[in-house]
Image 1 (tube, one colour):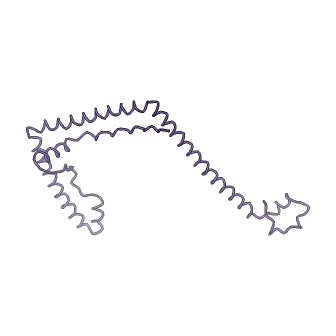
Image 2 (cartoon, helix red, strand yellow):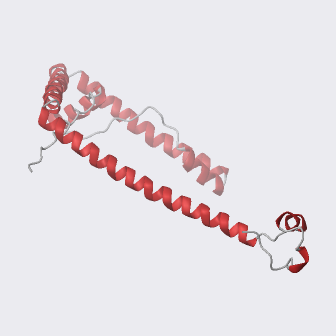
Length: 192
């Protein structure tokens, strides 16, 4: 019996690049400047401040000042490099190429996705998918049956153990055998 190979879903393209990512790539490629975009948030992290707070308020203040100075310097450097890149005459062309490359990747992905869906509709693949579904369903039913039997067995055992350990009261004795109550000792009589 030959098995049909199920096609794999095509890999989705990367997300659309941001202008900061394009600027960073442009600077690295054409000017050999390796810099990462920096956010405008220059405050220290709350976790760092909490650690410094354990030392004392002076440590929190010193950490805040040092962190703000370092991040502000990185932000200033990034803004200078970003302005430099945006003022270059060949940057708009590079930016358009990056966006065009993304759009081409998106169109290629859509084409591969259509081919994938067409392959899924073939009778051979549909038969293989149905066979796999039946096998998975069978395995699932067997697993559920085993779990159900195990659970039911535990519940029955728990019920029987409870019934065996529960002593019979005089009220229960009168219901069981009202005439021969004195024949049996209350300590050894258990309801089954």
